[in-house]
Amino acid sequence: MTDRQHIEAIIKRHAPCDGTFETKLPGLRLIRCSTPTLPMPVIYEPALCLVAQGRKRATLGTRSFVYDSANYLIASVDLPVMGAVIEASPEKPYLSMQLDLDTAELADLTVRYPSNERPSGRNPAGLLLNEVDPGIIDAATRLLKLLDTPQDIDALAPLAKREILYRLITGASGHDVRRIAHAGTHLTQIARAILWIREHYREQCPVETAAEVAGMSRSTFYTHFKAITNMSPLEFRTQLRLQEARRLMLSDGLDAATAGFQVGYGSPSQFSREYTRVFGTPPATHINSLRQLP
Image (cartoon, rainbow, N blue to C red; front, side, top):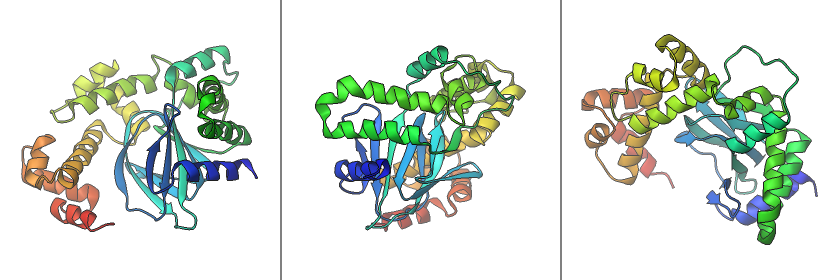
């Protein structure tokens, strides 16, 4: 049995039905889905997404990232993403693992194993897509096997996690992954602003204040924010507002006007216009269609 087949078998055992499953390994989640899904809003936090079977699309602003067993996705900062499983069936369900990125561990590895390559002058992207290499597959397999021997997790999981992080900082996007751990980099500054916007998105959230949190001028902040998130700060706030409003209507049963008001819209018509622009249909129509899904 190959490493990839081991990964598939382990995920199937520990994710026996469709859904997202927390595991006994801190920071590790398993995902299983037996049918393609509609694009759904979700917050991607700093993590490694490794697919064992099937295919998924993550849309960030106007840019899409399609990943499967041949490549892995890294989210470097908190991002509002539209995610959709695009290849899955009951016979061959979508199977994946998500591993949170430990920034303290990353920082230690970048100090111990500095890069000899000169960093590029470009801004890092919030989502990074790279080809899977055997080293990552091997380390991920050994990490997942610990789910079958939970008594070994405390002793061996930190070693496997550390190897995965090492493979990431020495891989194709190593420089960008290193920036996740380095305080003072543009990525870290924008990450601070993103956290602030997530806490204050119901308010007016002026760009000047978010720029101050990041420690940048307004123009510099806008440039780096757009490069990393593929959205302007105001578009980012809109995504957060609409995702929460959608949750309030779908899960809590709120009407569109009340949900819009709770997430910061003073005008029901403005909320309806922005919701329709992002999701393609008016709020009430969209929520009713989602409730019809199995």
